[in-house]
Length: 333
Image 1: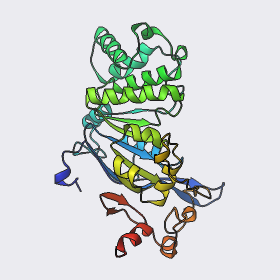
Image 2: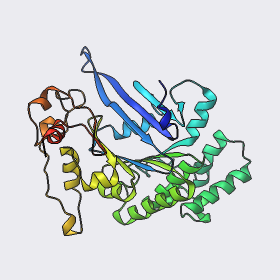
Image 3: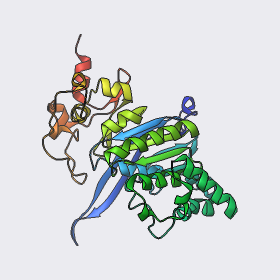
Image 4: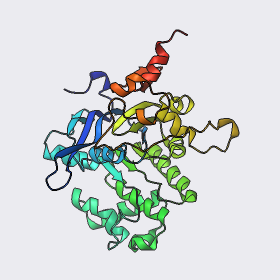
């Protein structure tokens, strides 16, 4: 099954992506499945940013690994410019690996401490291109300038840089092969607050200059509000709400999205929301509750929520998986 014809302009399209990990409990225990990702779909347009948000353990980083082909989905479809990413084709696969890059969360762990910045940046060019040494150096220096690094940084090791500078190096490495899509997995969460805005503004400037599309994975909604065009809220491997940034922040409908947004600090007193405290822990993906995965923590739970799993439905331009919202919509105004 190919993506719909009217969506052929999309840069990337995911349809019902799943990733299940088999695990054993004890030596003679029965094998069980951890459903890290359990049916996620989205469309990504050129030059746009899709933010994926949710608590730790909701499947955000797993999604990032699938999109960069670090791991293969258990089920589902993934298209890049209309091409099926999951079909074995060595030449097309090499091209796609160049065009979809990732920036990892921890700039201290994602850079090899034994390699100089020059080697870190030029390694993708050595593997994937036939550029000469002089051409590789020229391209590396050009990219360093774009991310705000100086020429003298070229021959230094990662330990000589601050966290913000290391993340700039990681972003530069991700851009060395001129990708179309950059997966940013919590790219500023390990940085000081004062440095975060600098790196975010850098990413937005690069997006405008190079026409990049971002999939921005984060748990920090104040960061997401700054950079996103569209927001996808995930809970226990599934999408519970999806819509434009403006719609999600102005009118969150799912109880989980409302709770996340109520916890986001606001300087303007008029924009502050009443705090909604979530009780209980995020359920284990090894043993999810029956019905809606969020039901044990939801203040709007009723009978159907414990029995059936809600599906994403279109409500006023947003996609929401919630029986309580469906109930609201069915009531006469």
